[in-house]
Image 1 (spheres, rainbow, N blue to C red):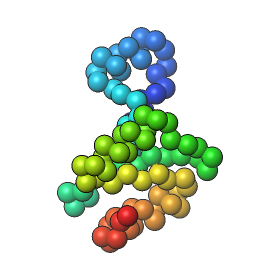
Image 2 (cartoon, rainbow, N blue to C red; image 1 turned 135 degrees about the horizontal axis):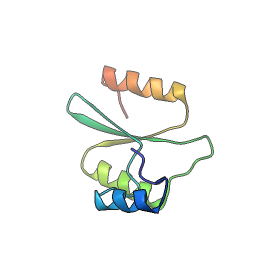
Image 3 (cartoon, rainbow, N blue to C red; image 1 turned 180 degrees about the horizontal axis):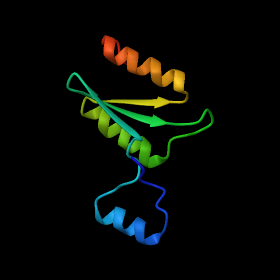
Image 4 (cartoon, rainbow, N blue to C red; image 1 turned 45 degrees about the vertical axis):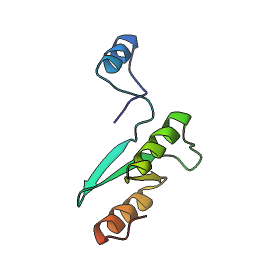
Length: 87
């Protein structure tokens, strides 16, 4: 998902009219009837307040929210999800 970087004001308005909201995770991965929401960050990146609120909502509903800072961490996450040892 790409919710925060519209190319121009018209595209931004179009996104909002279609229900696009700030804070939604970059990736959504569903496996074995479980939702995993994945936020991609650099080593120095921090969550926005909107992202923290989205995380809280997902976790309150029993979903999983992951912050990933490298390709290796992403590969490890997918492996642990598939082996049933997530979290």
